[in-house]
Image 1 (cartoon, rainbow, N blue to C red):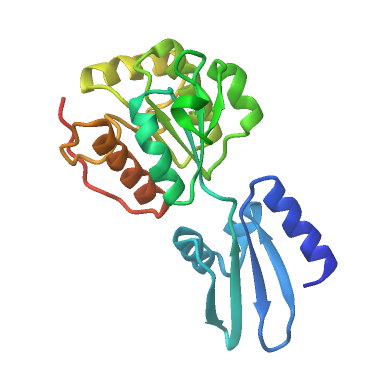
Image 2: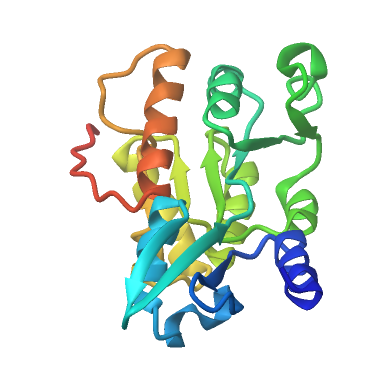
Length: 233
């Protein structure tokens, strides 16, 4: 790889931006397609397929054999709330190769004794989240049931375009949440992105079961799978 392409690729990864290195196997010519150029690239349809799959591929395009090398920042799960569900979710997220961060200003809950090596930030979301630079490879799970903590995080996630946003609560609770977000200026299109009640409808009861349902829904969102969901009130 040319030095300039390697430097550009490293810069994209450092900034948590997706890119694809396109190599013509016949000529050896290479080019790097950054996230801001996907929509106008001649290969845009195939690039989007590989992005959804999160995998590189060898393709044929107009008589050329091209290798599409996908470079994605690791998916990240930001959990708001150091609760029992978060404890169960941490090892599942690690197995699924997600970087997980827990944000909770309640220092009695956000302790290393409860979460081991999972990254903890014992700050209010409005203080902690700007430095994390939420992005389209970030999922957010709102688990505190406390609007004072969840709402600022939800606002940050909606503004950042996180690929998944899920929140605990019944339909009634979520209805009130939506009213608060409308008052904050968010459109119905943006609010429709919120998965609530959070997780696939597996009939989950225990924190571990709920954690499984949350992680399954996050993975489906990451891979672009549209799932039919019927949530109980």
